[in-house]
Length: 369
Image 1: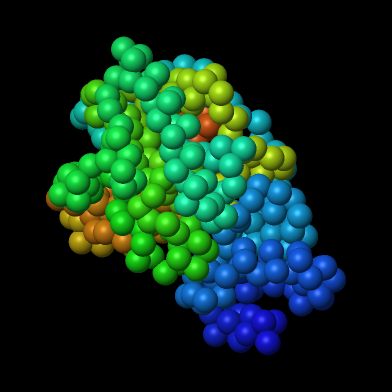
Image 2: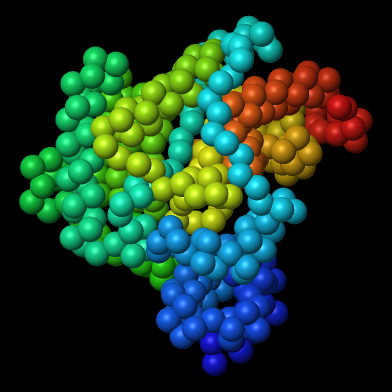
């Protein structure tokens, strides 16, 4: 029954990677307890066949345990032939100054975030309510130390009923409206199937620095989502602050889940590796037909190994003046410094294309190297 349903999904939803790479012979070779565990990983894509990935891990060891199957899924999504470990590297070897591309980029909106899971806790899909609250309490102790640090300061707010840092529904709604806090996950059918949004809102919260340019989400898709955002010209600034914060967390007693050859372990295989997304907002009126069409820009960006989103994030349209969000595509088998450099070079390339285009992307522009 299970395998026949997978075959049906594979035919009707060919983009579903969970189903596309399912191997009945491999599944039948597993012991019953392993089959049950793999089925739990695949549950989201099984119950929601319109998924692209359809897989969420509940424990770190599942990636190695089911690697004969998962490696095919991961290689397909990340567009690599073989998975090999890329060591973490935050050395940028020079300044990534946006004004060297163009002086008008001196006040650019820059953002970088990573997902992290703490090794000693189950991944969110397998966490009980007690696990979620216990993890939040561990992080609260670290946040108290971070708040005392003059480079960060700030406050912690919690959604957990009865927590000393609990905020009201109105305060939570305001933080969501300000794009600081993540939205209520309880209605997300993909995360519900995986178990990631279970026990809502227990164990959920947010730390925000005094200058509001540094945020850590607690209890979303991964244990932590660590973010730095800033208006400025030096890409180095956001990466350096993020690195400093991650080191601070580690030096205060937490180890992040990490495994060869995947790198940092995340709930969803789409974020394996650096688990990093770095982006910059830039106005490209010609390449977006004055903000009316992102398709041509996305075609060009794909050649440059970049992703394009609208001004308000995924699935949104370009903002006024053709404002778009640009980020390097790669997460896996790439280092943090390479992502930073790729973002810088990608912005430079798109800016040069923008200058030579008259009204929109042309075949000549797409051929420029």
